[in-house]
Length: 271
Image 1 (cartoon, rainbow, N blue to C red):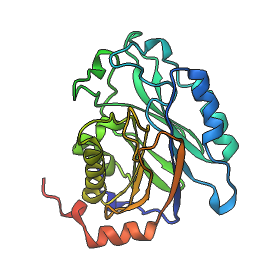
Image 2 (tube, one colour):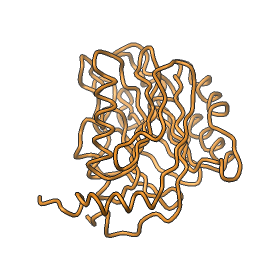
Image 3 (tube, rainbow, N blue to C red):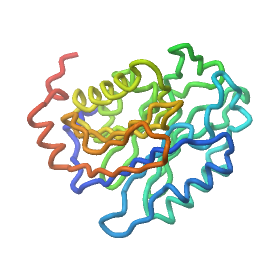
Image 4 (cartoon, rainbow, N blue to C red):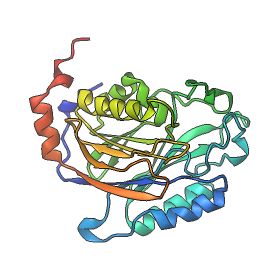
């Protein structure tokens, strides 16, 4: 793979909006929520990229419950509404869904990207941790990195538990990512917000990239949606509140270059 620093850098800012909102157990309600939650703005206030949480098309439900009845094709009702809203807003939107796959009982946990850019990413690392067994109900995706171009920036896609695997973030950066986008439903618990903040910060610093993470909120999940710059500084943040909220940050291409010049860890690696 080419080093990130060997390819052209972004030349203009990227405006990123995070949407922190809980999905419900009713898919129709979540589809309707897209039109309310994805912001409508014009000119310089219009976001280039809007990120909603993992499993936004339908919440996981109680631990271990069967989500296969709610799996859809990428162009199903949720994907179609996501594409409509993204086109209406003139932006690119990322949101999580359960995607029908070859095993009808174990769909994929998928991020869908629609709008000015289009892609999909099937979660690689299933949440078999902290007493959960996501792999009992879901299938893992392939390990190839998924990177999509948005506004001249290369955006790498990860989901929730993927955050705990630094090699995944690095594979996205080796594939050219300038921004790591991470929708999540980070389950609440002792120390979990600390883990979330620490790992997001580490992924930004060690890879000299922007990180944009949108989480489902309290009480079940941790919320705490964040955008971090390549130095690991929080430039936009939300709390744990269950009330729907948004926050916006601008990724600066000059800061990206200055950080990689000052901290050339991607060039200095010796594998």
